[in-house]
Each structure stands twice: as C-alpha cells, then as structure tokens.
Length: 142
Image 1 (cartoon, one colour):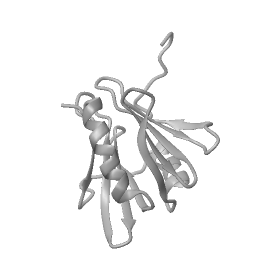
Image 2 (tube, one colour):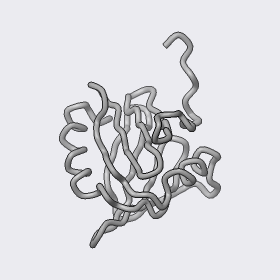
Image 3 (cartoon, one colour):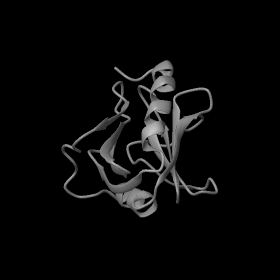
C-alpha cells in the first residue's frame, strides 16, 4: 500500500524536523525504484529509504540500508555526484499532490509518489533537469 497525500502531509514535517541540515554521507539504490541515503546530523544517523515502487511507495528512516545494487547505475552515479556530501536544506510537499522535494545544498530531488508511475527527478539549484530515474519513460501526450 502506498502513502496517501494526508499521510505524507503528516510524515514530511516530522522527517524535516529531524533531518534538515543532515549531511548525505552515502547514497545507494536497490533497483531503479528505491533510493537509500545515509544521513548524519549532530548526534544522530540513519538511512532515509525512499521507494517509488508501484503501489508500495514510501519514505521512512531505518537503521541499516539493507540490500543494495552491486554496481551503481548511471542514474545512481549522477545522484552521488550532485547529492553526496551535501546537506539537506528542505523536505516538503510541492504542489497539491504527492510530489515531494528533497532540497540539498547542491541540487534537489523531486519525487513523484504515485501508485503506478512514480519517478525521481534530479534538478540543479536553478531548476534545470539533470536526470530522471531510468524505469520511467517519457509519457507522450501526458
């Protein structure tokens, strides 16, 4: 079951209150739809797990990252280039739907958390799209 809009509205402020300012120490993926960010903030560390799996999307903090891909995909390497080592400056809903934005000091990650068609979109501070998750195909006429 996926997170609803009302659940995200309750969850994101709580996550932001703990993890804003946290350094992104490591970044891994498990498949093309699950992102794992190892975070460290004064006195606390954890792994932010972001999944856009169809009908099972979620955001949560776990103690251990669990299983990850043996080899990083090109998209994972791009995320590492722009996010790793930076700090989280914001985590919030954007628009009026299940669009989550994780803002970092060097780039932002926009996360579409829809049941059947979620995706990750990496953007520069100016809003230029740098890349998007490989499991998503551009939708013609959408």
